[in-house]
Image (cartoon, rainbow, N blue to C red; front, side):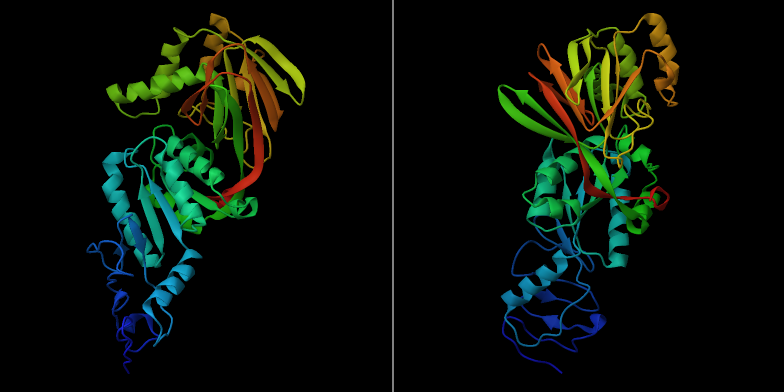
Length: 399
């Protein structure tokens, strides 16, 4: 049976997905096959079962309602509304692990096609671009799941985009994110047992379980303006910002390797000057004076596998911190072998702190790193833990 419908065109045997006929003005769908132009928007690429719009939007048409006479605009609105409920947003950093980028992307597209999963993807083009993209996917596209293909820096930007999105706290707490680690350090992924095995990571994303995850927030001042920066893994003062800058510079000489952080640490030890800091916890001063390093952690790893805070848990509602006053050469020699095995806190000159609210004061301009991204600060920093702010899809054994 066929029915005429102006813009809608002819519809043949509606009801079975594989036997949907032609829809004029909206596009051509055959055997769950080709989709033409929806509402005349976007350019069309040759991609089976897939519509690619100007903004890299991919929508898999895996269902259509049995309509025979309804205007094209209403049809598009209904389809879009239904798709938003299950829309997956994907953010890709093509510079992270770029050697395998093309192969991994094709594998992902093939998997999504097999699962008939509607999705929208975006590719980062410059620093902090993922913040803008994450806000767009959450605010404008209504995505409730975000898949991140990148390293710690890309993930941190996505978290900042979600946390800054103009949505209610209740809506934000329902957003799920997953991670396909493709960066240099991949420290937050390491905490969950995720590695660069792309197929395994995707399997975990689709078969794992969501778990409430804490997010850290640092409120700081720069040029007499208050700023907020969110972090998912760690926040570091002291020598850590210098190490992050050194590791970033090493990428241009030896490529992206997790040992970059270790080499950068050794180099930083020869150049670093200890700043004056004061730490207040729950309204009481814990320490004040020259500070070699202050590491505030949500995850247990930093710097490409260094386990500075082995007891840190992104789900316990508190932040785990450690600080170290300027060490002697003997103490440095004792500490270095313990950086990667989680035994650093056993040394008597390592001082741990557990709190959901830490206030840091500095006498002059300083820098800090949040998930490996370095920021400058010119005043006190308030560090808080936002319990269960987001949902992360993690391996089943962590649930």
